[in-house]
Length: 504
Image (cartoon, rainbow, N blue to C red):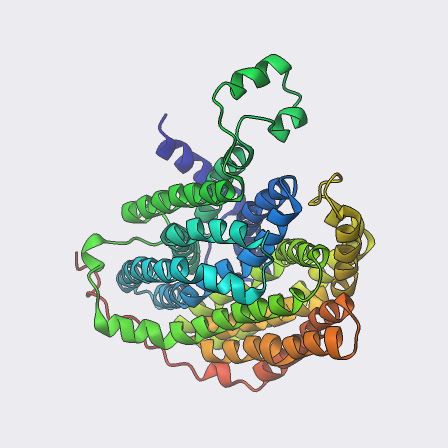
């Protein structure tokens, strides 16, 4: 049985399990379809986060400097992807609204054009990233021992950005069509490959810590060591990530070309269309601004973090990765709201879109508040998973990282509220509103508090962690209040001007 057949069978199994084969987002109850969409997104995002967690786990056992280098590199990865992330949001919204309105052929055209523009954009962004990485790491203030490692890692990531970004497009377009199971299955395959490659490409076959973890005999270790390969360190982690993403991207393209599930793309529809470009930019640019604002806030905050010693930088890197796991339910709920709102607005059912948003906000508050209790109680064990006991300053990293978690955990539920309402704004095509809320929360509110708290008021690292907690509460209040104004209902359903339905 071929890999394609195995993936198709696995997809059908999960589709039946989540009952997505007959899912109608514009009719019936709200809770069931919302969770049926959201649960596979949670699993997909957990798999996606496993990339970073696997890297952090093995890099933490490679060296403390390498772990700090990951902390410096991650914001740049976030920035590069976020610049073009608006394409994925615009593509998803256009597909959702067209499907809700019953225009499947136009949804196919939107998906095809989105893939085309995504490839071109990511090639340009990757080239720019490769050229500026050395300069950017110097601005961040990376130490002489950390900077070369971060640069090596980011050079590989920049050259492979087209695969990372392309797979994000696949996930977004399929989600807009109401299919969140297929991306989950493809992500699972790529994550398994990444996890298998990581220890070998980082450490090689000589003195690989994996051998002792799995209990490999001395003879078996010697056979591996005959190759003489000592690994590529942090660069090896980047190579593993890019290889796995490339595989996922090509599988995703193959699925959409076949068109058996989700949304179909057509090679003939990929020729650049300037009219489509204007329409996608109308939705995509504000979404990109939101993504860039988020990324810049992380980058600028890293400059403040860089004023502290390496243990604080390492703790910040670990903490942000743990938070990326914690917020998976909120992100999944927001993406589900985006899809359901888009399809219901396309079907001219704004009241159902509003009810979906209210339900998602309450559910996110309850779920993430429960997660916050767990994170608060088990802060030290959670952080210590990513720190080798024999590494220099390990105890200090765990101590600072646990304090980070305890500051932020009580406000997890508020972040869920903000995400849910912003998802509804994006589904309605009001990406500018979502951008203002996100950028205002992170850049105008969080960043000044981080600087004032850690430097002016001499709270040290606690000033950084306080800024996260305060901004979560502020963002939730701002998003909820803005939504109640009802401006999201003033929607211009300016859908994609693709070929006429049935035109092949």
